[in-house]
Image (cartoon, rainbow, N blue to C red; front, side):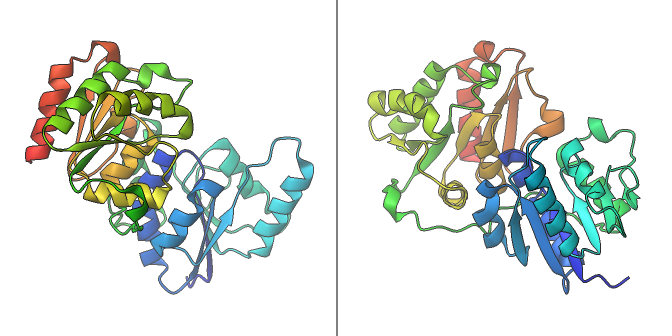
Amino acid sequence: MAFRSILVIKLGALGDFVQATGPFAAIRAHHRSDQVTLLTPPPYKALAEASGYFDAVWLDDKPKALAFGKWLTLRKRLRDGRFDRVYDLQTSDRSSFYFHLFRPGPRPEWSGIAGGASHPHANPKRDRMHTVDRQRDQLATAGIINVPDPDLSWAAADLRRFSVPEIFSLLVPGGASHRPAKRWPAKHYNRLALGLAERGIAPVILGVGSEAELAADVVRDVPGAVDLTGKTDLLELAALARQAAVAVGNDTGPMHVTAAAGCPSLVLFSNDSDPALCAPRGRRVLVLRTDDLADLPFDRVELTVEALIGS
């Protein structure tokens, strides 16, 4: 079948978006001559546009349940797009509901889990599959076989405004504020930063603006440390990761970026999340997991970081 207009849906968190970059590339290659549009939240607009995978990027502000006017606007836009096929890479209740916004009248072919989808991902094991493997399996049912790993090696940005030392590491001591169990104790990050600085590898602290206090402790105690919390966009984050000697952090979005950018990365997991389902994927990525991150020994992390630097 000759397609003309393709829609890709990817909502969700930063890590989810990064793990979809492989499927993005595969869809673009499969629909090389077609118009491919991405529907995604505003934070990912610049990254999506820079990827070269999409002809257009539409922003979805994810209307609330009773925001009828916004739902009608979204419905009209989707119907006016006259899409031949939709790849729902979010496969959530929300994104599946979008399938039904095309009623009445003909609906596009649909790859996802929505009831009535033309290409349903019906694998009974889908909820026990790693995100990357699940999306590969989903796209295979729609005829797309070759799906690469997540990749941000193409991301570029001018980093001169940050005045980062020539040799540096990236530390991500924060994470979702409502899930403190996903954080290795801050005192260990401070100690790790000091050790890296003593080896001539300046620690650069990443995170959102609300995590500035974590970075301030490191910058105060570690000579040469650089605080970039709340100061980088996603393209800059990926560009920094491509140049960094190593990245260490909790199970949070920026670590997916460092991994996909090719930076040697160590990601720390507690029993609050399962790396078998969601760990960053990359050529030089290692994972350490313990039930309670407060019990993860500093020496074990330090030795793993040294191995990554030397690899």
